[in-house]
Length: 467
Image (cartoon, one colour):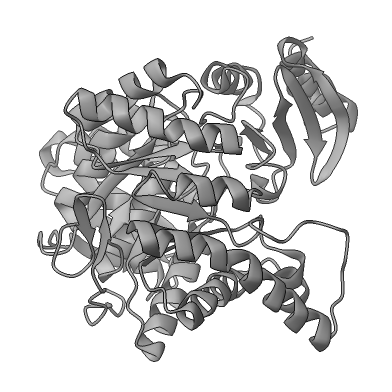
């Protein structure tokens, strides 16, 4: 086992009627994919999530109108006897954050786009860098003041792929850059005297997510600031591959003693996220005890063999991914085998092996799909679109394709995908080749065929498509 972070006993932060951190259990959260202005649909989905075991629910507030409507949603939930803490998800719009902070238990802001805007600037002098920090502080203080007056917590949520130009100039698109981006905002909050903070560093790349969170935990321990940490592998996609990605990232950090709240991001019905999250907390959540590691040996060709006594399938999707992710941090292994005792199914275990290796970025056996879990910003059926794209392209070994619901999650969040399908507004999609937009604002009902045509045109495995 790698070094643990048992000394990371986070401070307590109240979020509505819950407390994060300290000796409290790891809390489970999710995000609705309804239109925030549709109170009836949003309330219905929040109630479904609550019944499934979700403990906090995030709702997007892209503008002031949606932020104001959070009060309506909260009131309707209270009428129905549900007081689950609500979290406002904010990107690009400080005013929406300031409005939402009066109604919700927590506000999530992204340091990469809360104040900073992409202007194509590639270099900063020390004076320019410092002035930008002063400008961010001036813009952030009004939110902190409102949060303090209303008992509202703040999540500083940094995503790999949406780092500001300042951070990219100084640190590059790296795990270190993610940490510095979050810590800049932490320092501003501390200078203001505000400490009701939760931090998160997310990536669709498991290895980046693991590195960033370990660096952040070390940094917080050094500084004596034990803020609670929110864990998640963002844009994990759907199906077994997404569950394995989430397990490898979230589960291994929980096993090391890092993490106070988690969200398993699936491009599926949000309720489907909860059983996976509950199992992760059951197996690895703090104060719950850690699952005994399997018998592990390493063989020729740096192969790890993980041996289990016959665990059920819901654990088989989680434990080998976690155990191998932990093993990678202390041994130079490149392959694995899985033995599940008397219930071993060799075909099943081989498929699991391949998915784990691909999830951790060690091998590529098939197309990799990166997909956001959808939310109220999405203006097309993301789940149906993702499945259609999978059906048409899953045979293209070596390619990565991102399906993103809106401009917030793409193109930056695509994390270097070969191709991207990004929602740009109601019924409109832009297609990317790498980071370059090559087909702009086409109708959503034509976009999948246009994506296939683009892949053919670019020559990426075009011979593998049916003619």
